[in-house]
Image (cartoon, one colour):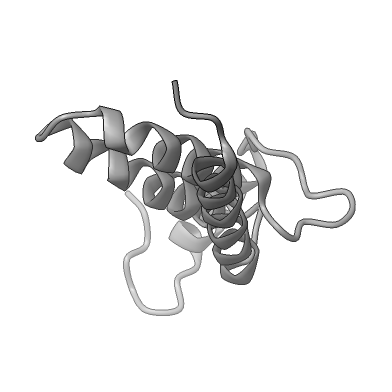
Amino acid sequence: MQNREPGGGHDVVSLLHRLEQLVFLVRKPAGQSYPSGHPAVAAAVTRVLEPNVRQPARKLLTRVPRMVAFSRVYVGVHYPTDVIGGLLLGRAVADLWLRYSTKD
């Protein structure tokens, strides 16, 4: 039976032992991370596709860039400013694409 009294330390030791055995799925960033490319691409593609998608799929489609941005911060590979910059960059590129692309 484990010691559950305050200051017993057995639970802490077993927790630390389990933490040492964790396998990280994402490696630490090696270099610049601003802006984040994943949210930038998601925002650009979503913005370009948005006019051609009907509701309710459009509502789901517009959430994709935010989910991608959140996931990049959640897994610890980007800071919030990185993903905000990526979202803004992707939106700007998509807006330029929509403005200057040829219409058939």
